[in-house]
Amino acid sequence: MNQIEKIIDIATWNRKEHFEHFSAFDDPFFGVTVNVDCTRTYQEAKDKSVSFSLLVLHRIVTAAAKVEEFRYRIQGDRVVCYDSLLPESTVGRADHTFSFAAFEYDPDELVFIRKAKVEMERLQATTGLNKGGTFHPNAIHYSAVPWLTFTDMKHPANIRSGDSVPKISTGKYFREGEKLMLPVSVTCHHGLMDGYHVAKFIEILDL
View 1: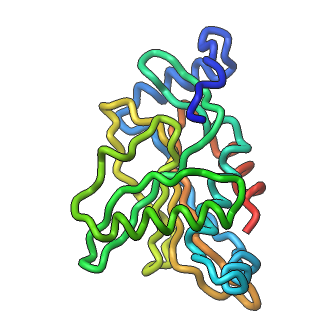
View 2: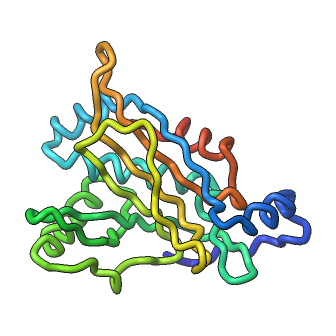
């Protein structure tokens, strides 16, 4: 995995002007936050005795990979499309610090969760950010913020490095009638995609 599927021909790309316009911005990222019905996924996590957060992460990455634009990355003067996405997340520790983590994606949710839990337990016994094991070009950066039911989210972005990785966060779920709703924040490079592509992701996201 982690292979470039194709290189976008910017000269003939229908987003050429959009890409050039927004790439010149100091901060070319845009973001939206949507409340997503997570009732079924929450119940499945309870029934299977697995981590709700990891089950959500697996379904987020699976959905994002189905929208081609979420696999676009800027590399130098090129735009490339990867064949897959790698979930990179934050892992909290008892002392309220966190580590970055890269989880091996597996189409089987339970296999993914089992391997991710092993990696989380390893990182929880360490210190620091574990930067050496993360920041893959085809990553999706994910963070769970289970303490807050937020309505917006601002992510740090290393613009000068050419960062173009989508960033997805989830907040504290809340009840809306009979449903459990989960805030999902999506932040993306506007040169690579628009609100339409984020809407496609939310439509595909099956929680």
